[in-house]
Length: 275
Image (cartoon, rainbow, N blue to C red; front, side, top):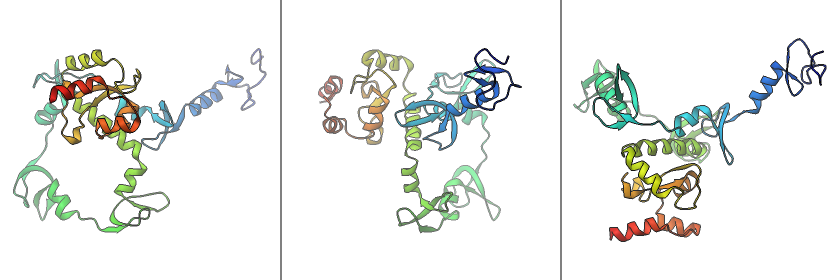
């Protein structure tokens, strides 16, 4: 007897492999389980195992770890600052900045074009060239017609159907990917604040200051970084990821008015104190 309820596997009709669950053998059950938990990631456009689903967005495990998983910062043993640890030398912790400065060997030469001391990118006629001069004077890409927007520009990507698209069209196609990149950069920028200040902001706000949601919380700049805002205690509030992505770099007063949201008291008090 293969099992009490089933005489054979309902998928492959075999009894050689042992019974697992739901009328399936061990092999078929594993195949069905993995296929059920796989999907096309909205960030990297690859079929991978799903880690998180936000609305219509599917995020794989790799992209979740890369862009959304928060790494706890620790104090570096060289500069004594709170940052992301990239290397351990015995008991000494080394942050990414100190690792690049003291451990990573970058070949520095005087560039033969701009005559500045920079990291060497390559050679031309046996003379060293920095990366900036190489991209500006040597690696000049021809402008072609984009198949999507029909305008002249540098072709950034050639798709599988031989469609040639420019960078702006490619960025619109991969919008989720660039939003995730922006989120990662913001998390790194906020990491310059001390951990005590971040804990104080969490205890002060507790929920999203815009909609009152208490899930998927992150830090939002009242005055955006692109408009001169800094990662300071008075310029950071807690916001859910939906409100944070929707707000982008818009003015907080205009954004609240367009969405019909009451302007948070914390932001109003800050404005009065600033005046």
